[in-house]
Image 1 (spheres, rainbow, N blue to C red):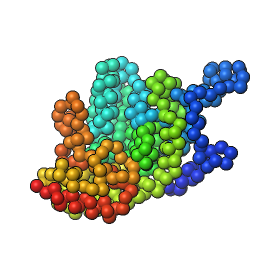
Image 2 (image 1 turned 120 degrees about the vertical axis):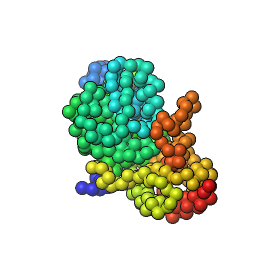
Image 3 (image 1 turned 60 degrees about the horizontal axis):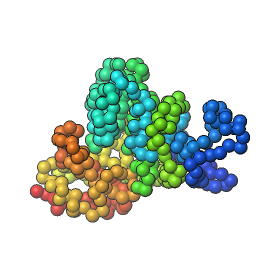
Image 4 (image 1 turned 180 degrees about the horizontal axis):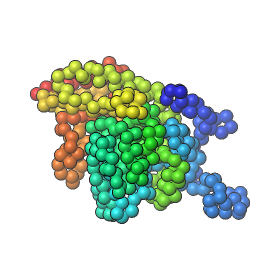
Amino acid sequence: MTDDFALATLLTAPHGVEGSVTAPIVQSSLFTFSSYQDFADRMSGQSSAPIYSRVQNPTVAAFEAMMAQAERGEAAIGFASGMGAISSTLLAYVKPGSRIACVEHVYPDTFRLMERLLRPFGVETTYHPIRAFEEDPDLLAGVDIAYLESPTSTTMEVMNLLRVTEHAKRHGTVTMIDNSWAGALFQHPLALGVDIVLHSASKFISGHSDTVAGVVVSSQSHIARIRDLTVPLLGAKLAPFEAFLLSRGLRTLVARMRQHEATANLFVDRLSALPQVHKIRSPGPNDVPGLTGRSGLMSVEFDDSVDIPAFCDALRHFKLGVSWGGFESLIMPARIGLAQAGEQNSMQKFGVSPNLVRLNLGLEDAEDLWADFAAALGKSQR
């Protein structure tokens, strides 16, 4: 069964009530009970009936069920943002003295979470290149959590997850991965041995740039731990209306991802012929085990002949902005994206070339996008 067919079958399954083809928006903060015993059973954990939308809501539960199936997991939890998902998951597994091994070039706010919040509370994080995770069987000795991205943020490097998870299981290390780039279609880390998968659902899962959300998918036991420890206490809950929008986004995920992929393939082919392009960072099918497609998020590193600010300002279809995964095409220069007020030498800290730009190839006509890109490049030569 192909990934496309499996996901399409899932998304035609009934999630509504009384003939509704979509799950209703249950915009209620609380849920009542018909008897004292029903209430007592819920409070004691003998029942799973919804009680309060900070921890449980029927619309959110419908989205969570869809995501669990899409990522081939047993259960899922929705959050109010990708960082809500990441922080709630990490905080469910760390304590003072815990050790995290994190991949280099991780999403900058994940880096800041580890450095500005977790480290002062006694959680040590070390950062390692992908090759070290793959080739050093003892890198994870004594490590509580291996925090991964594949592809990595900005630099788009890919990892052999099968090899890394073999090392992790030997040392009893919990593996977590941000799988937002693959959109729950082009890579399934749980099938490759990863313990916990995270998404910024604001990106390809939503697909419409109208929702900020996150989601975690894993086994029943891992999800139960997160739901017990941090979901109720940190309060980063997913709202019903956003869950409705995400469920809608999932229904068009396959079609959208295939169009993103087709445009990305066109760009990779044509970029490779440009002398100004130093390196194209766009992983594709079979670059590593388990990777079956190419998403619309890529990075391009130019040589010094390109004036990056002039190039960005000459673009018309590509807009300058953060995030990705929606209809609109976006560009993010690394020298802006990795800067943060109060942080010095950001480019050196993250080890990224100032000539690198990240592209979100949207759903506009691919030839229009390429014409825009090529024209802007012609206007930006030093």
